[in-house]
Image (cartoon, rainbow, N blue to C red; front, side):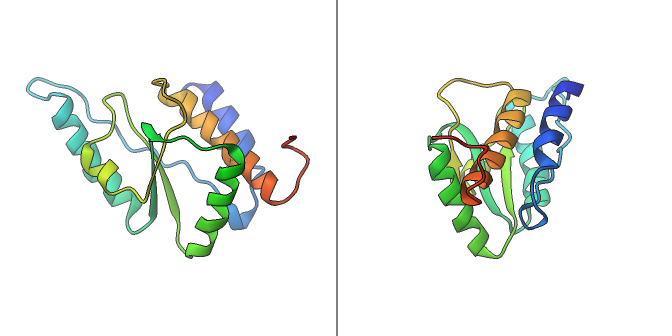
Length: 144
């Protein structure tokens, strides 16, 4: 990722408390080489994603997912905290996500009907998680 993406994400990640720690785990993308089509690439990435997530509660980001407000995200996050397990937010690569990943999701979240670049999604999600946390904590960052 470009430096601006890492800097923006780190700015929000460092604001989060220990009990709501965020970690960015990058899954190495598969390269489209001779004989590899989009579906083959997605399947290979799906295996690595599922290994990385383990038994986590899975939130898949997909343009066809449910669009929610930041206030609703705050409510979702409170529900996630009650689960007693880690939550993995899964963002697809350049070829998108394999159908098996979407099918394994506990929640499919649509940020927009637009197709957004991975880098922008990473920053947007980091900010929204922080904003939702600030709502939960009644911190003045979020203003109605």
